[in-house]
Image (cartoon, rainbow, N blue to C red):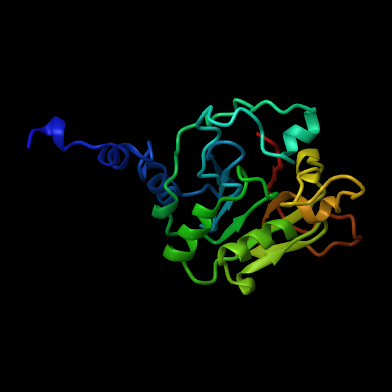
Amino acid sequence: MSKVKSITRESWILSTFPEWGSWLNEEIEQEQVAPGTFAMWWLGCTGIWLKSEGGTNVCVDFWCGTGKQSHGNPLMKQGHQMQRMAGVKKLQPNLRTTPFVLDPFAIRQIDAVLATHDHNDHIDVNVAAAVMQNCADDVPFIGPKTCVDLWIGWGVPKERCIVVKPGDVVKVKDIEIHALDAFDRTALITLPADQKAAGVLPDGMDDRAVNYLSKRLAAPCITAATPTTLTIMRSTVTNIRSMWR
């Protein structure tokens, strides 16, 4: 069979997707983080990969999906957050603009999966599946209640999930993750399936969305004289904010 006849749409997709292959996966694994710092990689949209000097790996809002792919339905689905926020019905042309830079199924070293809120471009079933299938069986999934509800619904064991609200702190090896207040209006006005907006107040933002503040835990520690004194020597702080695409 000639080459042009043996090539199919499926073989083309498998040979070119994801566009970066495992390049970034390998780069992250090989990175030696300088003392007193974090290394960070942008994964597209608001996705961030964070690696500490101790080799702790955390991903936040890693999205492996697409935006709109067809003009087939010219209208937004009923109850869509952008429809409610802008008062329009016509379909948004929000196409995915960044390549797939990280292969979720090539991830082997990861210590926590975080999501800021439950929109599809911030929490991804493919990431959950890849981590569950290929990584350690104690990797936690951390996020607000709506995110945890999604993960459990997808099949992530409840005991692997950690619900956080503003003020909560979760330690992942040498990283201390602080959940902070968020205000994502589009998250707050996203309607659950089949719910009508009339006569129903939005639920609390704390159940819908959080921001994260990640601190490097360094030794030795200094005992604070007052509650307002910084207790961690040379703590490098990275603020990862929840944003909408």
